[in-house]
Image (cartoon, rainbow, N blue to C red):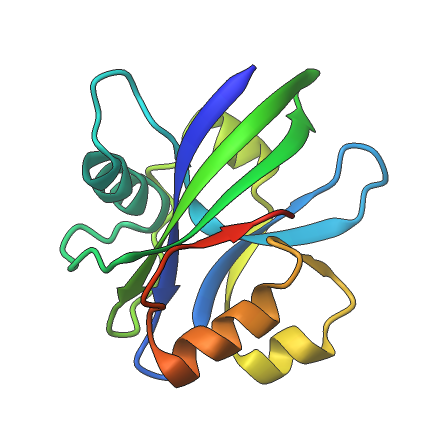
Length: 155
């Protein structure tokens, strides 16, 4: 099943990236990923970004930055395999306390926590980060800023 989604790279004023954690259905290992979710019928990418930020973090006012990456990957959850087509947007925000009270029932069941990650923490963890090269990609983004051309990720 095809699923188009928006992912937000929420980076605070300390250059920390907000990630959620879930556990892999196949092996139980934790994996961390940027906030976001599927596009609802009739929504634009920007509308999805605003809705997902509000629902997942309580953040309602922010400036949507540029789309920096696109990723296509296969993922399975809830017994369904998805052909994921993800749009990643870079968003600078002031540090804030995350409010997950807007989670859907599925998110309440599957998201096990969140953390504002530094690049050093990303380098030191044994947990899986999604996308796979997230630490290197974020390092480039924080040093050089958004790329001139969209980057297409394979994993």
